[in-house]
Image (cartoon, rainbow, N blue to C red; front, side, top):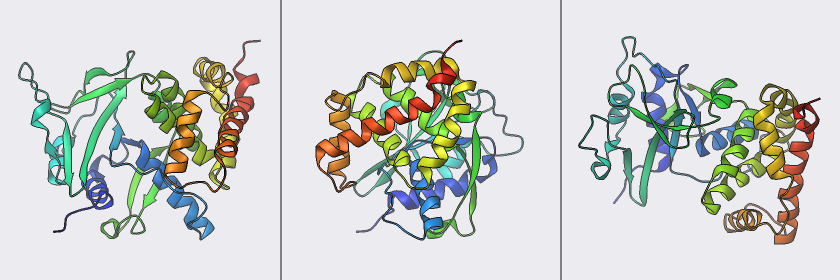
Length: 284
């Protein structure tokens, strides 16, 4: 018995969403995978970093996204094989149920997000019938600081020719992951955010690029960076979220070091990051 793997589902969706390429921003764990793939191509190596594995595919959208002659995002997702999860059907409104793609060993969830004032606020996307995005604060950091990656057959053979995918800049991604981690109520999800940050910051190419831009970003988003710096300045190697992050790194076999060394590396990378922007974000 055979079926698609997560990479094939991801490739089909990127291909289907091509008409919206400049208008939607890929975020989440798959961006992490693309950053590492891009960097490792340049290094001609694969051992310098590994993506945190995820099945979920996340996009952030503007609050207004007219189709302008294109099929809707929901239609394009269904063309790529995604199905509505009828267990999430709301009978009192016209929103689309959550979308998923079945795999042999699980499912791929497709999540649409947008900026909002409250965490997990429902936001109808103007111009996209039945599409309700999950609203979260700080997502503007991702949509206001973007770059384009050419995603090709090294991710999956279906991505030949390459697809242009809009993603956050490294510094924006890392900063927003930090902000998300301190808002989480689940320690496992908060720790996963920190692992994403750690894997980028320790990378020989991605780490320096991120640190180069973080000071400017901390000027631009001084209020948000101050909150991040205050939270991370209190982190210790024995803090519960760091302990859980170490567990995830060890379980994923992503570091050849003792638990104590991994914890020290995580805390060191976070403190180094906030030090780069700390003076810039403080009021004078």
